Length: 324
Ligand SMILES: Nc1ncnc2c1ncn2[C@@H]1O[C@H](COP(=O)(O)OP(=O)(O)O)[C@@H](O)[C@H]1O
Ligand SMILES: [Mg+2]
Image 1: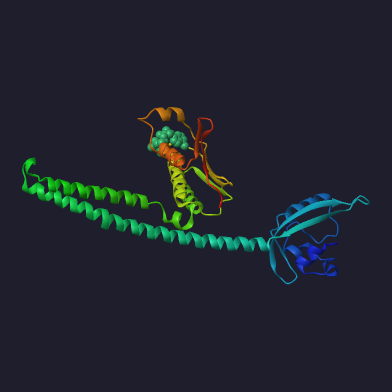
Image 2: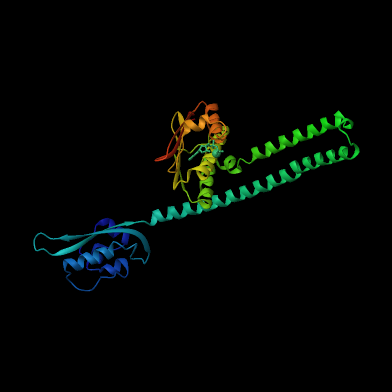
């Protein structure tokens, strides 16, 4: 039976102190295993009751509402006569749950918006490829067929024809580059760096065994779009490298905004490599790390790689960028 309750508990549950006194635990929590109507419990029984109370996830108010709660409980022993009782402390989580539900809803809506943006983006790229690049290559193909049919030897190919084909090929290359450039996701443009990286990390987690994590600290404002692109590309290349080379269990991406700088730290616990060696071995060195470094230097930043077989790889990038 309940002997006393503090004011907060009375307010929360909606009872007066008089009403509360003498109520039973199931009146507050619903059914509790280990609870019985007996007046006195042994210490052992109380301990069992306690462990079943702390598992409670909700309580009932006088008006019949069921509120989510976290419950803690300790066994008390009176010094005078040794009688034992329980003191129960509960936290009402209704408000927290409401907020979480709202956030969940917002997240879902954002996810839908992102998916729609991506779908639009795909359609646009497909159109660019088909109507733009595809048409250009078709035109080039026709041009080559034409003079190929007329002439059996090279001398007959008119310089104007080769010049024109050359021009068309150049245009096609430009078009290909511009499409590739556009592959920077719309998400980055519309939703900003953090959402774009979140998206990248989510996809990596869906597709690969490495557990990717991403944290952003103090990063609420948008920054220079060029810098957003550069940082996104760096993350993208790092995801690729971790998948391709690291054989890591975990990878952690962290970005934080300080007053004077942006810091991006990318760690994995994979096999590592010798950054010195890769730098020298030009045949083997890929373009990924080099272009990462180039991008960072272009923004007056610093680029550091630490890598070893025991600890995996860590890339630390710091780029000066004042908070507006
Ligand atoms: N996270 C990593 N873990 C282990 N090795 C890596 C990692 N990142 C890069 N490397 C090594 O550095 C080399 C150069 O990487 P990169 O410049 O991106 O070129 P590529 O990925 O095309 O090989 C890789 O071939 C690989 O051996
Ligand atoms: Mg690479």
